[in-house]
Image (cartoon, rainbow, N blue to C red; front, side, top):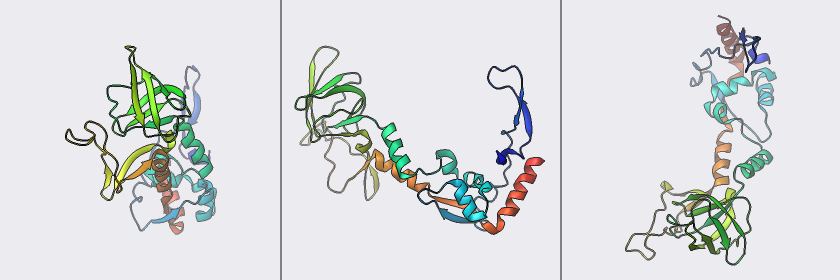
Length: 251
């Protein structure tokens, strides 16, 4: 890879190999780019459009594909989280990491419907295993895609003592479309539980008209979109900066 040609080589034994191999010294680091990453005299901004690849952006800005690596050194977010995904990749990713089904309830299930129990819908007849719970959001996560009644139903489960437990479910949704958190005009809000004197003591409060639900998919989408605005070196200064970077590597 052209990026590593100025790093120099070291001998290194990979895995259990006894024979050392000559390989680029990827441990070498210089802070030339770090020194200018917050200096507006050196920087401008670029918005990564749908389908833009790092090498394409480099070519568009600098007339060569070779300076794509500067984007990662200048922007901590894309170095840590990666280049923003195009829509088809994002949809594939979100379905992969959220493959399950969520049963939503306003009831307090802290003492029942434990992880590992099998849940059965009294209307749908669908059943599945509980793999996790979010007690603050009133979520019971069922393994895989299970066709419970979308609009809600009463579900039952046999606990470890052989006692049948029931809970009223308000809705059943794909995990990716389940709530990640809630917001209002002040920011993220804690939905909380009803007080001892309330109409539904000990159970979760209703969300209310002013509270917005942010789903898992929306939360990840917002993060992906936030990666699109990046800092880049001004084209008129890129040759000078690259020269200084490579010179420092050779020292």
